[in-house]
Structures are given as structure tokens and as C-alpha cells.
Amino acid sequence: MSGAASQVQGDLDRLLPILDAALTRPFCHGEAVRLGEAARYSLEAGGKRVRPVLCMLACEAVGGSFEAALPGALALEYVHTYSLIHDDLPAMDDDDLRRGRPTNHMVFGEGHAILAGDALLTEAFHVLAAADLDPVKRAEALTLLAESAGWRGMAGGQALDLEGETLTTYDLDHLRLIHRLKTGALLRASLEIGAVLGGAVPAERAALRAYGEAIGLAFQIQDDILDATATDAVLGKRAGKDVGRSKITYPSLLGLEGARKALNEATETALCHLASLPIQNSLAAWAQYLAQRAK
Amino acid sequence: MSGAASQVQGDLDRLLPILDAALTRPFCHGEAVRLGEAARYSLEAGGKRVRPVLCMLACEAVGGSFEAALPGALALEYVHTYSLIHDDLPAMDDDDLRRGRPTNHMVFGEGHAILAGDALLTEAFHVLAAADLDPVKRAEALTLLAESAGWRGMAGGQALDLEGETLTTYDLDHLRLIHRLKTGALLRASLEIGAVLGGAVPAERAALRAYGEAIGLAFQIQDDILDATATDAVLGKRAGKDVGRSKITYPSLLGLEGARKALNEATETALCHLASLPIQNSLAAWAQYLAQRAK
Image (cartoon, rainbow over all chains, first blue to last red):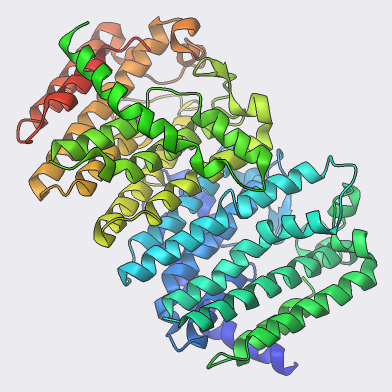
């Protein structure tokens, strides 16, 4: 195992048990039993937990404890999970497989899948609003989360992505815009929320935001490369969907080699931005890991 | 015009211009143009604006200015509008007409309708998180909003309502549970958020919460009665849908006369809870108006 991979594994071993134990808690005791099951089904599917882990590592990178970032970490995973459920719906990307299991609407029906997404999105704001946090930090974290998830962020990016399937011409600028909104905004917010909850000074917060921007780009390029090159069994979701639907991707615009070059550049940019932080090793390892991941 | 109706009209004339001017503002300048249009389409469809108006009146009823409640009022209308868009989807209630116009997905497609709902729900939390409010009041308002909209509130109630269509037996307790979650929770929160933002003392807040609970029940009973008795043209949406789908309603369980009796009782309960408040006339008029409304 490389140094980066073993650092990442160490962080996962340390952080995931705490995160996973807390994630499904809000959906365990309530009256809408079936909807709670639907929310837990997607939360329990696992996945890489990239956003919450990066949030907690960003908090540590500026000298905070990872526990201080836990409400933000949970909120980010709720938002991410809701977005997967809604993106998989027949009216959107129409996927039947996610994280190696049938998608939420295949198991619970479309109505409950829509509502499970809605409930997860709402719980994201609840867990932050009700947390025992400094009021100013809480308001900043909530604002960052809402900005990154909403019309000017992820939801807007998904809409542009849907529209892109019917465009006859598109270019790299439009692709970058879509990814900046659809994937980049929430990843960047993951780092910035961790920074805020860890009590970062402005320069540290800006550095983590820039790091988040760069790994967000790298993450998306690698996603596109994997869709073009990997198999269903490795990804745990349908591979080759982008090509099948003539979707705009980095490999389709730049070729595979061009996409790999852009991925390396984005990763280098991410690493540069870490230089000013008190603690860098975990986030550096994650930047390398995300660029090299096989699924 | 009765005294109640003219009081309600006066409140609407005073409050709606300010509310309507602010509602669409977050969806005017951004990159996801079509999604912004979809959000504005449903916000501009009008409707009764019951939740934001009640929020501002609750704020005034405890001595606050209605402007202090504006961020809460906007948030409530965003949540309500998102819920209408998602409830109208083919996988949920499958409605093609709402407020006298084609529903959001009929105009913008299902994908954009789902995302417009998501963006509106997210903006609800953004407008409150980013508002210039006392931090403690802001956190309380955000928590109330999330609790009332999420799994233990509106979203959970909509799930139970969907499931109810396939139940072979149901009773009044189950119907009350669905309505308490689906309609009641957000109406109650409208009053309680207004109370919090107006600086209510605990007894005032509890009174407004109880008033909200009672008019929430009255509102739903009247909704069911109207669905059973009014026409499409009057309602601006499809009438008679509940009967057509054997949906559980107050008239189907209690008969029309029984439902009207329950409506009157709930309205009387609401009026009783106003007795301890410094200013009562507007909220008293609204309780009567909501019970007598023809659409």
C-alpha cells in the first residue's frame, strides 16, 4: 500500500465508525416508518464518505478536533445522499444500480425515493441548526451548505447537466461550469465548512476553499474517466452510461490522455494550496487517493 | 364583506406586496436559467400565501414588526411551494393543474420540477441562515422549520398519505396522524417561527403553537370538504380527486356534516388560544376566514 493509501485508510478507520454510528440515528424513531427505511437504505449503502471525511480533516488541518466538525460532516453526507437518490430517478439519470445495490426508487418506489431525498436534504439543515455550536460558526456553516447545494450550486448544476443531453454543441467552458456547480460546489463547501467549524483564520479558510475547488475538479475528471474505462462490477454502478447517452465529459472533449493530464494538473493545484496549513498530511494523501481511485 | 373578511383583506393588502417582491429575488440572477424559471413559475402562481402571512401576523401579535419575520415568512413559502411541486409529480398525486395553471412538471418536465423543488427547499434554509437576525432566534427558527418540513413532519406525512391509498382499513386516528404531519406541522411552525422572531415569551409562543395546531386541522378538514364539494374552476385544481382515488378524508370518514362539525370545533379551539395574546384581531379573523374559504 502506498503512503497516501495507508494514510487514507488510517483516516477512514478512525473517522468512519463515528460517522456511520451517527448517520442513520435521525431516521430510526418516527411515524413514517417506510420513509425512514428508505432514507436509511441509501445512507447504509456506504460509499466513500468523501465529503464528511474531508470536512472533518479540514477541521483538524486548522487545529480543531474532528468532533467539532461532526454536525457539518453529517449534513454534507445527507445532502450528498439526497442528491444521489434524486439523480438516479427515471426523470433524471434513470439509474437502477448505485453502490452495488438497486437504487432507492427500484426498492421503495419513485414517490418514496423523492420524499426520502427531501427528508435527507431537510435533515442536513436540521442537524446543523440544532447542534451545540457557536452561533456565528453555525450560521456560516448553514449558509455555505445552502449556497453549495441550491440553485447556484449542485441543484443548478444537475439541471444544466440534464439540459446538456439535448445540446448539439458544447465546449469546455460549459463542461467546467456544470462540474463547478454539480460536483465542485459541495466538495468545496465540505472543506470550507470544516474550516469554519475548526476556527480557521481567513487565510486558512481561503486555502481550504481553493484546495476543495481543485479536488472537486479532479474528482469529476476521474469520475468521467472511470465511467469511460471501468466495468459495472468495479464501479458498483452502470459504467459507460455517459458514452451511451452522448453526455459531455472530459474524455469526450479532451480524449482519455488529455483528461488524465487535466486530472494531474488539478491534483497538483490542490496540493499547492495546502502549503500554508498547520497540518497537511491527511489532505495531501486524500488528493492523491482521489485522483488514483479505481471506483 | 364580513368583519373577518375585511380584516383579512386589509392584512393581505399590507403584507403581500412586500412578500411578493422578495419571493422570486433569489431565483433571478444565476447560471441555471431554466431551473430559475421553473422555481419562479411556481412562486409566481400566487396562492393564498397563508403560511408566510400567518408567520408575520404571529410576529405582530406578540409585539414585533412584520419585517422582523420576513426571512421566516419567505422560508415558509419556499417550503410550501417545493412541497406542492413534488406532491403534484406523477409518482405522487399526479396532478396536472395547480392554482389554475399547469403544474410545474407539465411545463418544465419532471426532472426540472424535482430540481426546482429541491432548490426551493434549499433556499428556505438559506434565506434564514443568511438573514441579519439574532443568532439564537435564527437557530430556533431554522430548527422549527427543519423539524416541521422533514421526516417527522411534512415529508413523513406525505409518505403516509401515499401509503394510505393502498390501505384496506384506516381510521380517524390514522387520518389525524397524516394531517398533523402533512399539513399541520408546517402551519404550526408558521405561527411558532413568527412568535420566535417577534420575541414571544414562552406562554405566548405556546399559545401561538396551539392556535397553529388547531387552524392546521381546520385547514385540512376544509380542504377535504372543498375537494368533495367544489368544482375545478373554483379550486384552480382538480376537484373530486380524493373520492376518485378512494383517499381517506374527513368527509369519507365522518360524512359531510360530521366534517363540518369537526371544522367548527377546530376553529373554536384556535380562537380560544388567542385570548392571552396582546394583539388578537388579525389572527382571529384568519381562523374564521380559513374555515369559510371557498377555495
